[in-house]
Image 1: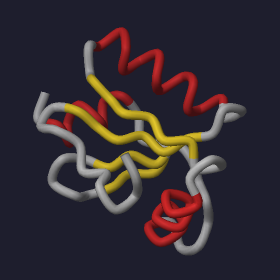
Image 2: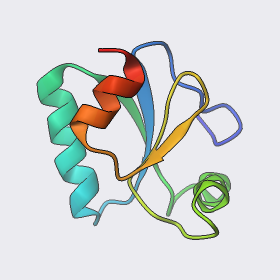
Image 3: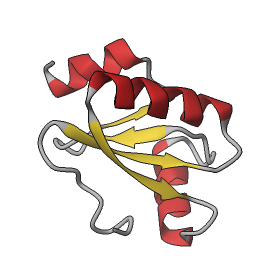
Image 4: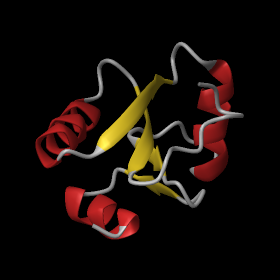
Length: 88
């Protein structure tokens, strides 16, 4: 999956992250515990995805950035915000 084809399936999210991001690890654990599916993209390995993250964060490569099935995004959301965005 690339930044061009990164819209997740209904009920899931695309998570842009880095291996060293503590906030990313925390959110992944919470998503796993809640049974919410996600596809993780390491922006350090995918320049197009890093550009996408920058484009939705005022030029900053802030992670975690999530993309929802409706095409909307959220930067460093809480689990509650993710559930609300997914209608759970």
